[in-house]
Image (cartoon, rainbow, N blue to C red; front, side, top):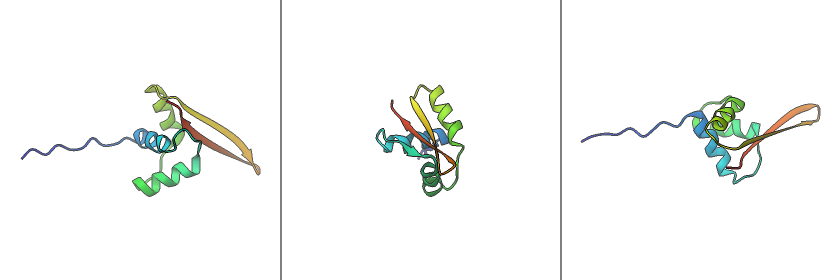
Length: 79
């Protein structure tokens, strides 16, 4: 019997899955972090993982707003 290990998902792959699951909708940074913790058991540096996806050719958009004196950030993938 030959066992073949399934390829391990990188944090960038995990972010891509979260964003693709949103079907083009904006996903708030905190929501992404909660999903990483819930589904994968750890957090991630989202802006760095988004940069990696961009280098791989994905169109990852980011927008920020100041809400109640705090900066909030959202991401989405469009390709």
